[in-house]
Length: 233
Image (cartoon, rainbow, N blue to C red; front, side, top):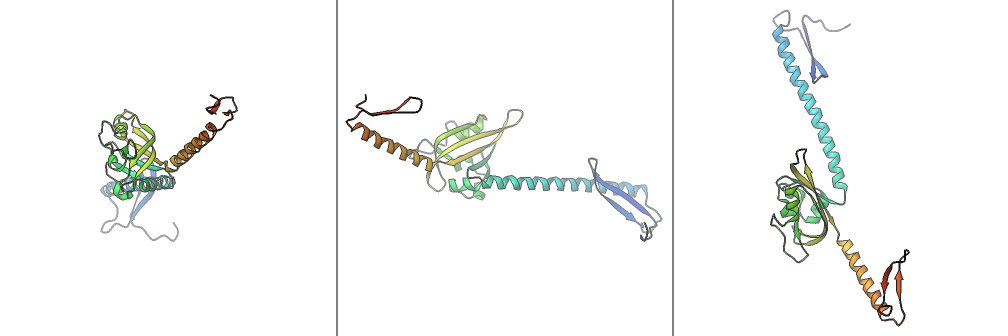
């Protein structure tokens, strides 16, 4: 081109990988000889091929990291506790909500057995279940069938007993092999308090109705009996 420095010899090779062109390598004025050789072209072409693969891999990794950061942000923003588990039952991911609920730092949870982190109990005062054959968490991961415990209790790492709703969703490949699972742990302490308050309120209402001299019954909009007092009976 106009005003371009003088070139006595020239070699240009495209940087490409899998049919995509990422750039070009230009070499000029080889020292000591008048022109580049076929061997030079092979060497530079090989270098360009490796460069193309490296650039493509770098772009792919950048996209993966960007997607990972996006999904991690989404997982961290939810109020539900989320735990990733591998095929050996070890924790691979723990979001902030799960860490707070279980009383463990996120970095301390990685690589640990999920049975150490989420110790299922039959009730708040019962023993933690660790036997693989009876623990529903271990059983769900081993069989790949999953499980949902609507009203469970977990013993946290800092010594508390927390009522939770626990779900285990296995990650199964096309061959039916369980690669791990995603666990959802939701603190239902407030729900249990509301249920207890409602039950107490109903008991007080029934006590009032049973001690009145009038016949009392309550029906819903479809005519179904919701409550009757003793005098009605």
